[in-house]
Image 1 (spheres, rainbow over the protein chains, first blue to last red):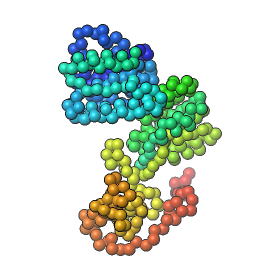
Image 2 (cartoon, one colour):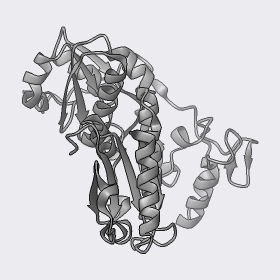
Image 3 (tube, rainbow over the protein chains, first blue to last red):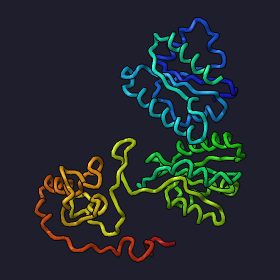
Image 4 (cartoon, each protein chain N blue to C red):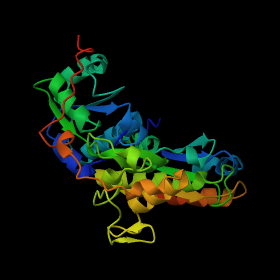
Length: 125
Length: 223
């Protein structure tokens, strides 16, 4: 669970985004970023996202496999729906819903991983 | 099971925000199965309220707990200290649980977080639909196991109305099947279509809501 206020939590599917993150050569971008590996983006829970934010995380970025390319068939679609519910809860609570974002990248998309983390950090910090 | 859904957050928040110590109490039976008021939903609601409190500068201590059932007295034992600690209990049980919690802990403010909707079944994960109206005089034997009281929008007992089109109900053709089409198809499948020719007399509603709140006393079981 996040302890520092300045952390961006990146929840990565182990089959795609996590592999993309592992291929990073320049780790500077990863300052204030905590990567959490999930067996599938479909493992993301609304409560988990909210708990990270409640405990002080600056934002949560969920990265799953490209749509229609999930090892568990529909995990990434499920993740999308749960992120939508988390965003609604944030909206209800009066919190900026842009603190949560989901995107879909393959294991080869290290450049996209960097771009998404940079973009999210620039929004949050 | 009893099927419920969460009240809009703003209504729930409005009802609890004046309290300093709040226990969010889930129920581990029906509303856990219909994903409205179980342990997971307690966590989500607690986090949302804490985030809202931060935004609004409200100081509130929140505890979370879930008991097996809020409609049976013995399950409150494990959370009685938490209930006594709280200024208010935000119950995520059905209306029965909310009332019973309030009854067991007289003088404690117990607030509902759910709207109780119906007795229903899980059609598939995430989809629940009504099956029983609790009328107190079951007629399922006459209609092939499909209840015209709960599932016909007009609770008709002697065949469909003129609003049945292509197996759908005129009240909401996209979402409601005509119960009488379902009954006809089921009776045909069961080979007892001719039973539907029997006219049903006016239903005795005295076993249902008529006569005030229901109560059953089993003398052989009373201690």
